[in-house]
Image (cartoon, rainbow, N blue to C red; front, top):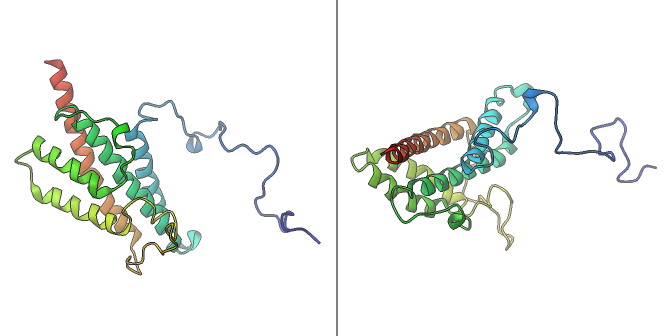
Length: 209
């Protein structure tokens, strides 16, 4: 009789000696190049999370092949939440080049609260664009606080319980449209990316003068 770790029959994927997870490949469509411009930066990480969400969600319409998407809620929502966290940290650091005091990524390394990060970022955006539409920032805030309500510290979409054994996501709706989730995240990040591009333009123009 086979033991619990014996390879079953018929044979599914199974570990063998010599497996290496991180190695070069020959197919450009499946190979990640870590030396490309922007890789290894906060912005590069954020873009990776954004692309991952989009690619996951765009496969959902292949329902017959992919199966039901219930369990995809957890990785999609986690990726979205972490995308918000990284993007706001990038903007806070970037904006501090124009509005003191200067902030580094290390200064924000222990902060994972979307509510706290937004409380630091929004005043910067309002100072940079005092006549900008407040409704846009209010819309962003609504989404960020919604995520914060369900996952205040970046753990709820990663683990089913907290350290005390209490269930995470107890207040989450029983039905969640993942495509709508992605589109909502995409819209918020679009504003963040526009702000980042504008801040970078200001910084470069200031350096040239």
